[in-house]
Image (cartoon, rainbow, N blue to C red):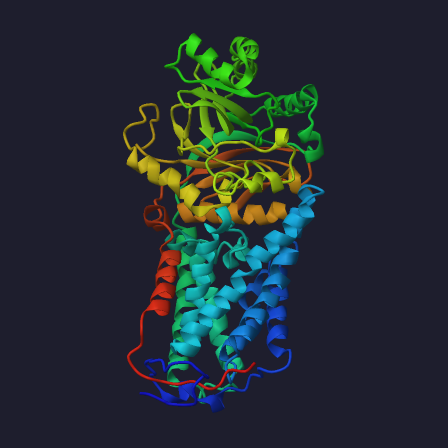
Length: 591
C-alpha cells in the first residue's frame, strides 16, 4: 500500500513497498529533531558504547548504548543530510577518542596519530547514518533491518579500511560472556554484533515513536519483536549446545613466558640483559617438574637477528646478495656469523630437551634479495628451524604504507631516514609443526585481531592438504592458534584487554584453542569455546604452564568465512543502487 506526503525540496519521488500506512505516518513520530537533540542523542550513545568496553567493561551496555543515537533515524521530519552527518560525527568522536587513548602511549609523537586515527574511524558513524537515511527515509526500509545491515557492513569495512582495524566490534564487548558468543563459529563476531544492533533498532523504534504498548504498535513491529525473542532463545540454546559438545583431546604441555619489559628498554636494548631476563624465565619453567613439550617466547623477544638462507643458494650467490645491501666487507661477516643466532637458541633447546618458539627479527636471503621480517621461529633439537614470517604488518610501526604511490608519506612519517620501519610482508600462512604431531598457526602481534588473516591458515592448510609430510595429525589440519605479541608499547593500558577480546573471538570462530605469549601481558590459554583457562595479569612477569586442549571440530566460519559481513555489504549495495517500484514522497527535512 502507498502513502503520499510532502516531498523533500528538489528531490525526485522515490518508490517503496509499504506494508501498512501507519508505519510511515508522521503523526506516530514524537522524537524531536530541532535544537541540539540529535547531537546530544549521538553523544550519549558514543559515551555509553565506550563504557561497554575495557577499561570500564560494563558489557551489558552494548545492548542499549546505541538506542539513543538510533532515535535520530526515526525523527519527524527526517534530519537533513547535514544534521545527520554532523550529529553522527559527534557520536563517533565521543566513542573513538576515549576508546583509542591508549594509542598515544606508544610514543611521545603518537598524540597526533591518536587524534588522526580517532577521526578516521569516527567518520564511519556519519557514513552509517547517511546510509541509514538513504535506505530508511528514502527507500522506506524498516530501521530494524537497515541498522543491522549497515552496522555489519561497517564492521567488515573496517577490517580492510586503511590497511584494516577490526578492533572494537560491538560483539567484542561480550568476550567474557561465553554463553552468548558461541554463534561466532557460524558468522563471526559480526553475527552477534548485528543481532545486538537489531534489538536496539527495534527498541528505538518503539521508544522514540511513542507507541509504548504492544496493542498500539503496528503488526509488523510486533512480529519483529516476536522474531527477535525467538532469535535470542535460539542464540542462548545454541551457545549451551556448543559449550557442552566439545570433546577436547590432550594437547602439548607448554610454558608461556610473559616478560614485563617496557618498550623504552626494548628500543635500545642491552642484548645481554634481555637474554638474561629470558634465561631466568626458562630456568624457572624447567624447574617446575613439568614434562614440557614447548616453551614460547613473546614477539621479537630474542634480541639478535636470525639470518635465514635459501637452501638452493651457494656461498658466492649469498655473498653477492649481501654485498649489494651491506657492502662486500660486511658480507663476509654476515655469512660467517649466519649460524650464531640459530646455534644460540638451538643450544638452549638441546640442553633443556624442550622445543622453543622464539619471536625475533629475521633477515631472509633468497633469490628475491635480502628481506627483513618479523618472525616466529620453532627450534627443535637436531632438526632444522621452522620459520613463519608475519603477513599483516602494523602501518608506521613495522612499515610505512603507500610510499610507492605517495612517496611524500615517508618524509612526513616521524622517523629519521635511517630508522624508518622497513619490514616486509610474509607471503605464506606457514604452520609450525611441533614434534611431528601438532600443527600450530602462528599469529604475530595484532594478526590475531584480523579475522581473515587467521582464517587464511585454515584455508591454505585445506588447499595444501597432504603436502605436509611431517605432521601425523589430519592432513591440512590446524590444531592450535599461537599468538606472540609485544604489548609493551601500551603497557598498563586497556589495550591489553581489548587485544585479548579479539583473541577470544578467533578461538570461537575457528574452534581452536590459542596460546598467547605477550610481553607485558596478557599471556593466557584460551580454549575453543572462548573460555580463558589461564591468565596472567598485565604488567607483570609470569610463566604459565598448562596442557593445551585440542579441539577437532570444524566450524562453519572456517569453511566459508565472514558470510555475515559479506551479506550486509551486499544488502547495502542493493539498497543504494536498486530502484523501488512504487512512488512515495517524504516530508521536508529539518535543518
